[in-house]
Image (cartoon, rainbow, N blue to C red; front, side, top):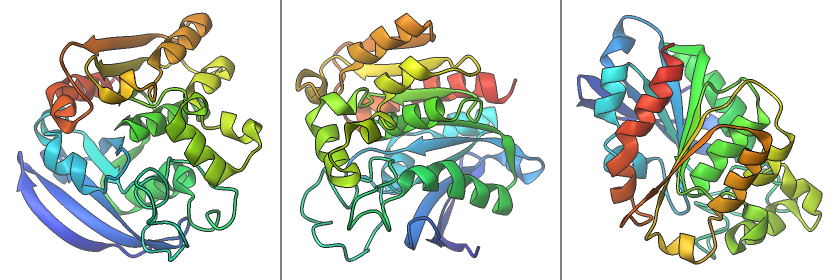
Length: 282
């Protein structure tokens, strides 16, 4: 599968690059960002996948999170895909900020007209890792996953649905129980239809209840002053209760004064990369 380099910038001794390719899962042209640490010049490196939130592209994380320094120090490749297919000419895909373009929700859609293109779950868990392993000095046995908001939801469901595939998982202000919040209900109804048993496949709080696999240490940071927390969109308490019941270790940190923005992500990204490095470099 051919890759076209869109940009390349020297950063923290390594390179921050963006590529585009024709996606077989999404049936459109897709971009992803990849940070290659200095270590990647001489050996294979573990890969941390980062999933961004609503309205984001591959650019938000690489320009705002400040992840490159810690990735360079710990020898991690970081891959940040786009958040949805683009330019599929689906009626209604540009109508709202929380559904359609920029809002793929990391599910495989089953409803028309979305099901042909909106397959972000398979793109993130299967197509993209194959692509990265084929074209970059990545160790396919050492992957982990993280994300913010909708992407935090994505990271959690990818890790919980694929026991052993990811060495660690973390999230910033994730949508923890999408079946119970307005964002999730809108997206799931549109992409998956009215059958709520299909929704359960993509709800982290539900998935925790049926998880059986290697121990998964979950790190979650949440801003106490996050407007979406107070609006009932994130529902971390539901996830924590489910993890406690299943004895799945979760470190949940409520950060005083922080909101939902990338200023919050920037403030704690080093802790998260360190969390992943502990497992990826073990």
